[in-house]
Image (tube, rainbow, N blue to C red; front, side, top):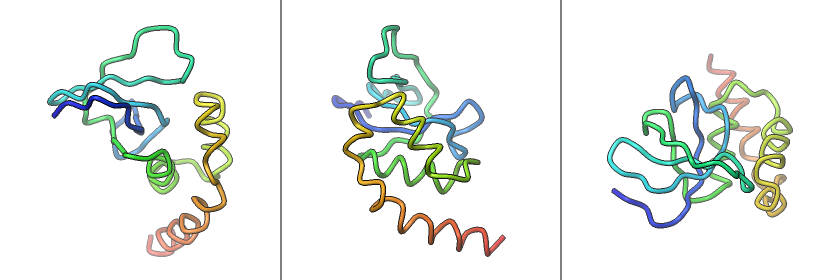
Amino acid sequence: MTTKKWNWCTYSHINGDIPQHIGKVYDIRGSSCNVKYSEDQMYARHCWDTDYVRVFESLEGAICYMYTNSGLSFMSEIKQDLSYRFTKAARYVNWDTVLRPLKIKKMLKNLTK
């Protein structure tokens, strides 16, 4: 499978199930893909093994996955990291809309542990 457009992704040096950052993925080929870490990235995109990357069609999807599956406790940590790395895209996120269902989902997830 090869993508022609940029998609949002989460990536991790540990494994794809525990995301550490949000980025943009391009050129997915078999078990590898290229990840861009910020909108103003001057150096080349890095090639990643797809086991360490989760791809999403929307930024909100990546944010939801990051919030419910990362070790971060606060949405403000994700917002701060995203605002630093992808300033333009972060401005258009409706954080209140993203946050409401996630708070409930994370609370329920923690209750079942």
